[in-house]
Image (cartoon, rainbow, N blue to C red; front, side, top):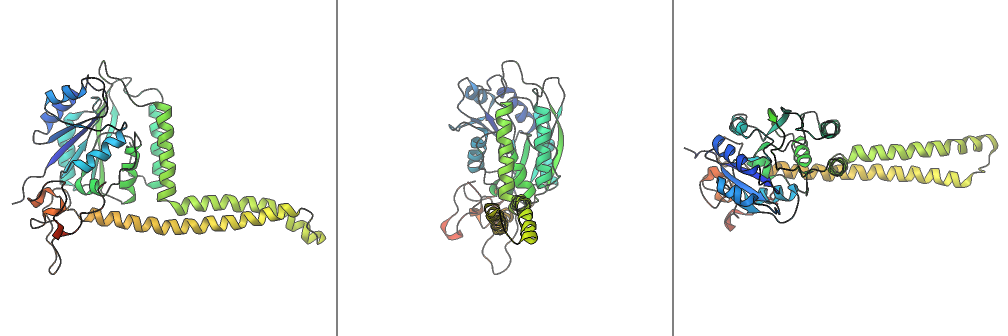
Length: 355
């Protein structure tokens, strides 16, 4: 029989002394078998001490930013299900069991805690509108399978974590995770969870306008990287329209008089047509590169078994897969090796999706 699936909780914290103890205790009550990691992100208060007293394992990430914490945690922590929750006690941690069980039962690669405001002031001024606008932009560009893109409460499978590059540094990390799931069409579901105001003595680290601009910039950058043919087609179309506006009067004048009195305008229109063609070709080339990158991420994703399912046996004649005889794959079901550690040399390199 396979051992029980392993569960880990990651709690990013920066100066959350007033709230982190309750978050850890609530997670312990909901998931007594889980390992709870509190990542202290350059706190200047007693966050680490309070979390340790509540029973959490303390890890440190000196580089400021939630994205840096998630990147470090995804590299360090190995579990069949990895739960992420903010350390400010705004999310209902008692729903953790329900979300983890749903991930295994699906099986899903992501269970998102879609926020439902239960107390006045849970959202700061402008946050509700900003969340809707940014989520709407992602839905238009990447797909309609998400209603609360910026939620910091989610449960992820091992194969999600190991195929996710985690490039963002700050609060844009949720956007990046959402787009990753949409691009690879990973099985995802949502659970409506209560969202309440911060406890007394706790202060939000999110700066509405600055972080909103950063998230919008990440969305546009992801659109450029993940939808290059769309973005380059739009740019090429605008350049072609400008060329038509400038060039048509020149052509009409030439047909009427046989002369080109506005020679610089004719040169500019021709140049815009050439540039538009080059932009369109570059878009098609980048689309091919993006397709290859997505194929690689998909193969890394498939190297790990679905959450909650027994390990797959390797087909006859092939090398060992993520089974009991192959501890190098880093899965808990294998029963061998150090979780998250490097594989033995004879088993070949580990999947390259881990950062």
